[in-house]
Image 1 (cartoon, rainbow, N blue to C red):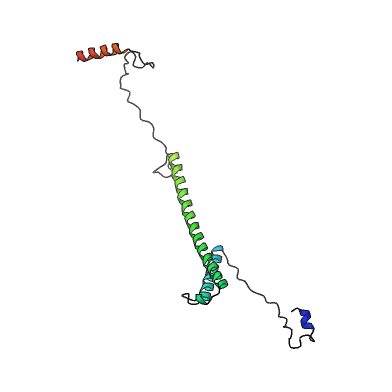
Image 2 (image 1 turned 90 degrees about the vertical axis):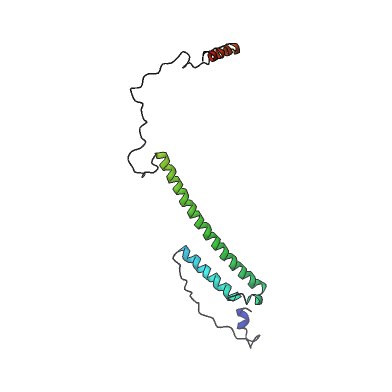
Length: 166
């Protein structure tokens, strides 16, 4: 019925028009952080589920199909929120270990492994041979780049001669 129907008392004398209610103001608590919002929505879902189902699900059989869908959606929302939180925690751990690995790689490249990154020094000098070692004497062909060519007969003859001289 519309307001015009209520104005026409001749049509409906037994029906009185509803009193116009004063506008209500609703105070909404502003939650300080996303964590507080998530905690609040989680508590509201739990309250909704326990109100509709009971503490141990005893009221579940009394619910109609639409109410059961509301319960399922609330449970699904709780699951999604828990999984997302676990995923975020895992991502934080991965980021921390990747930062640690990057720090170790930077230390390896800087040559400061095992020392503090600000340690003075660096790589040690390469050890030098003592000066009292005599210069090597090379035999002919020892330092030549080209390999000597030899046929099989010459090789066998040299090998045989060396074998007899020993």
